[in-house]
Length: 176
Image (cartoon, rainbow, N blue to C red; front, side, top):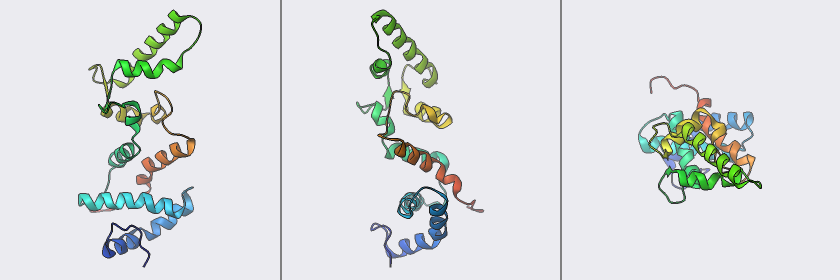
């Protein structure tokens, strides 16, 4: 027997292969992922649903799972607070503007900080919380890296996009 995941017992392993075998073949043929990549993504989905006693996972749940798995917001919040204040944002945007006129640079940085808080601080409490960030990025994925590069290359960004969208490729399951 082909063991997919050592944390699954034989029955769960067989069930996974039975349920997802055709999906693994289909996704491998229709995406840029290898069979191992597809199995890895589907096993995350399968184990999540097993642990939660459901056969479904919402797009939001999958999205949040991969945001947490990749530690996306942690890149910006090294203090572990899961919020961005004006000081943290100000430090992050220092690299955006440079030149000889210090006053103009300071003004551009202040304007950029105000713009970002107007966009991301939806509850106007003076900090950008993870929930606010996630909601904005879900609606406008291009803002994922609003304070700078998170991932080392475009391949990883594509992986996040695939992970976010892979749930939409599952056939609807009536009655669940």
